[in-house]
Length: 107
Image 1 (spheres, rainbow, N blue to C red):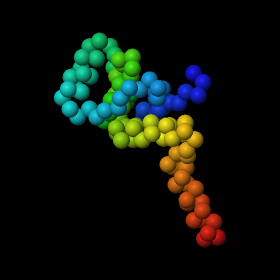
Image 2: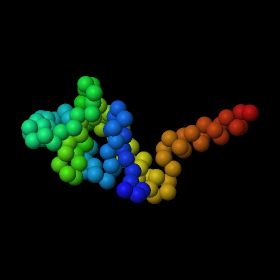
Image 3: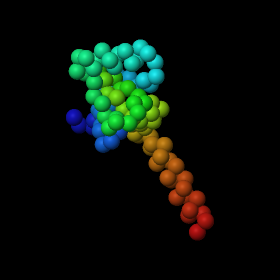
């Protein structure tokens, strides 16, 4: 597992970014039905700690992970990992650099 990147899915739980096949909202009836069927087969991991389920992470192995983190946030985390792999800094790193430059100009 060298150079493997992980995605934070909430409450100190992480998933290998390479294992994630899809990140979807849980609003639609077909997705809820999919969760129900997978639950009967024992293929659902609930990492919400009792909070509202906001997104579903589908793994290549067929396991579904229920997360309380919103879908846009999870997709953004995957995008940040992709940027780091390509040698580009993450978005939050760019913002921090801009803040530091502004502080230097003021002093």
